[in-house]
Image (tube, rainbow, N blue to C red; front, side):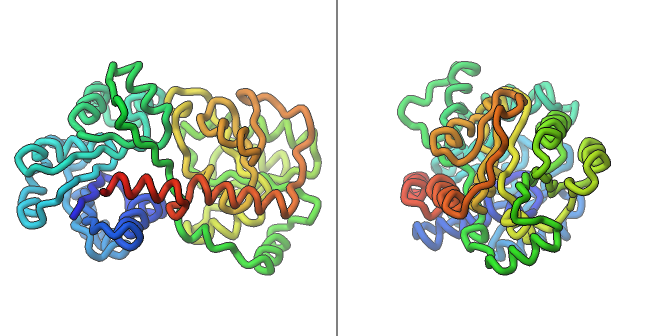
Length: 377
């Protein structure tokens, strides 16, 4: 028996694809029983617990104090469950979950793995995402969790480079890179007849080239720069249209007002995203430089490719190397304009994009399955 521990993460579509589907995959495909332990805020605990249970009926859902209060004492909640199940390995998603489990590592004799998804300290430096009461402690929390863990996984090799240079850590030969993998729902191709009908509903013709952005309106998404880049590209290339799958936002609204017949903004349910993606030609992944962005592996890149889209990204993102080497999109310097018109992808190109997406971002690919098997051995 292994455990997978999460801390203060909402049970949304991302949680379903990145946590629940992965633990189900480990049990069903790898053959290793995994118990999901989810710490969720005590505020609205009953409702959130119900949501988690709807996604993972066997999950153990525990309360955590709001605002990261008393986090170092949350390990007490784990003791009775540890005594009952005695897991051989506890995999923790991120620094906070690792911090909770670490005091019990030696006492309960389990191997502790930190499943690192991002550079927590650099995200705080760039975007100030944590409450003031703990913002000054984030660097040390990240260092402590990395040092305490017996094993650390990362979504890119560049994350290890950063930790070794910035925190003076040495991972020797224990590095295990597992990129963010896509939901299995995207592996099922959307019916082409439905896609064509839906494209007509959206007002797209066969000659339109549709650029889609699917994601949040958070600061790290650089929507001010992205929309400015789009504005200039659309002025140069009349057949370009843009579709934003996000909450309404000022920069998007301004672009819609400038191009009312060419820009749309829709905020849709997670289950509806695949058909919208299938109506587009390219997914947009352009962000300003930050150390966090430069080493990350955004799940949207994988989702775009699995939908058959090319990815338009810049060299501020670690993923540009994959896009460039596999020829599955277009890469720009910072937010420079492309020197040539964006081409309409053929059906063969879309199929190739999808195949490369499955190879690099599907849990079922030979390479990634082997990495999960190694992690949960």
